[in-house]
Length: 394
Image 1 (tube, rainbow, N blue to C red):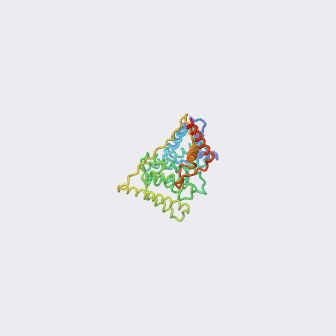
Image 2 (image 1 turned 90 degrees about the horizontal axis):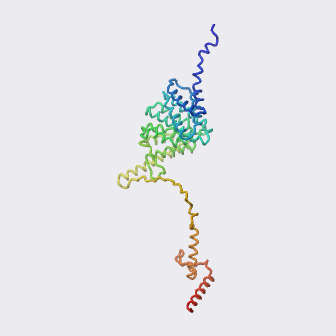
Image 3 (image 1 turned 180 degrees about the vertical axis):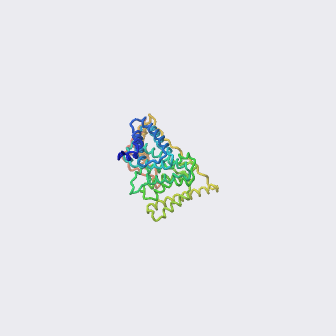
């Protein structure tokens, strides 16, 4: 006779199939570095063999182990190597959906754990964020302008680390870091070969949305300084800039950028602060383009020569061991001491000239030295006359 619970037992999943992600999480968070490294290699091979879509909970378990795998990694070179390997796991997924889920769960994990990271570990997690985003951009570029991963990838950035508002609390440190590093990451992913302007503009949109959204003013200012200003310096270089920006052969569609800012700024649903930020940035772009166009026209007409970027490279030299400040050098005389000596010399000269200074005042008239005692000068004259009389008598 058939037992009542047999059908339920047969339909239940096997324990080995359920515990794969848990096993990886324990191995990746192991104390032994050799076991952790083997776990990363096996995880890469396992992900490439999986044809079924991964569940979000399973991917969160994997990132929990990968987070602590990075946590226990020591020494800068070892940390950089591990961060690169974890970023390259984006390419281990056979389908784009798995890669997008991997990046999405990474940001969910890192945003949840960010406030618990101490300052000594922040740098390696910043580098891990850069590597994951860089490999995500590289996978988008592999698909070209019609990449199916482009929209979901930018949506992950928009709703994840770049979603800064009063309602959604996000650590601004990650937003600041991505704003500063985005252009360089795209340049590294393309090997400075450049992208089609439309694809490049699509990758910029998540950052431009910060200007149009309810983000705080500090986040909007960081987007302008970290993204827009660098683009302007690349396209229209200025000799007054402190740092030269080189993005390779990348071309920017400035018309599309200006039109997008105007359209978002004129939208009635845009807040007043965001509208002002959009219009201010748009005016900056148009003014820079106009000024550069006039400059180029003047050069072609022969009215002026092209400006050559001759900004020197500043190198701070260490002082030698026998270096000593000038105040401690032997025979050093300060400016104040020289001024006192000069004043005393003038007073003596004035006394020798009968109380008048050789230095004229502002009106061109000789200045009387009021500090010299008349009786003292008379005594000196009497002494000189007495010495002269003795010499004549002799």
